[in-house]
Length: 403
Ligand SMILES: C[S@@+](CC[C@H](N)C(=O)[O-])C[C@H]1O[C@@H](n2cnc3c(N)ncnc32)[C@H](O)[C@@H]1O
Image 1 (cartoon, rainbow, N blue to C red):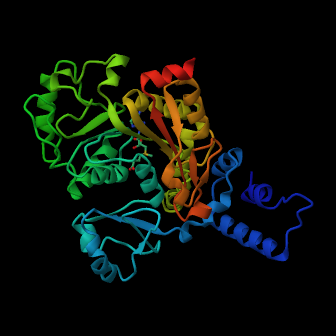
Image 2: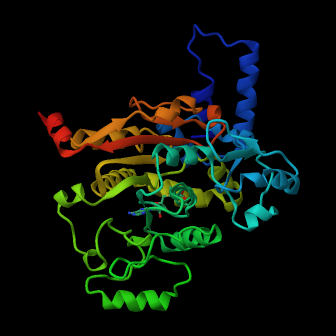
Image 3: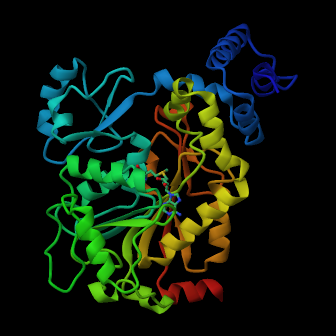
């Protein structure tokens, strides 16, 4: 299928009674021209068409600002940063601590960035983290943590109290995550290191030492490629409430009533098609790379959505009763979002989809499943993101659901 054909079916076929005005026709032709400039490969266009995604969203990249977050306590630096990067930091009114800057402005030359007082994170990603409602003292799990921008924000929200555990299956991405957390000075001062509870991870602990420690633990096998690895912060992180020697035994379902995380983020692996800037980067990296990295995942579509469902199930299993889980992806497809969430809700009597209260002020729209939300790159001025917030009902409430 040619690019032109894809545009024809998505942009140029208004129903006969809706006669487009001269203005809308010229808008359509501008969008067509812009879309064809991007030279999206045919396989990607077929993927977009199959999922009802308008390819012209990839022409909005230049109108989506860059977002930064100032670490709590460093907001006073905003003027200094403005003069360093020669542009204004516009406060994002709907998301505390966030600022927008034009997409072509780089923050690398700012001292605040170099000293780890400011980091780049898209506002929609910030919204997903804020939907968790993290409070200092919470025990938080980030199930797909790397490269780590959301984990940084989660740690910021915890302050010096509570624990955060980051898990990811890709070791090289987790290494980037560790570097990022180290740069932003996060985690190092977490919790007291009680003798018999799990020692917190610090980026300064050499690999040899960790390997030695792992060898002395009976059941623990050092993560190989393809096995999830874990970053622990805080004296009782890992599986919350367990002692070091208990950490690697498997738990019965009933144990999760007493231990388990207060908040779990499942920012699942996906096809990234909603992340306009990410997709645009393939122009330089080569569209072959997009076919290999993005569409390989799509080609094994059933595997990808099965992985997403399993990540959601697993995150929910580790959530304590009354706790909150957020499921998010940066894909715009129904298959990776609403379908996964609906499937999960249908099989889990103790899961309840929650309204995201703050979303009424966000530039998002409702997803197909009521109470879920979608950030659309063309209308939100953010990267595309789907967010669903799920609560684990205490046993008694869950029983009522079954009756
Ligand atoms: C969308 S990215 C996460 C982005 C991250 N939350 C952030 O804000 O930087 C999805 C991540 O899921 C990880 N992943 C894929 N399969 C996984 C699994 N089975 N268990 C844990 N992580 C997995 C990938 O390696 C990837 O880093």
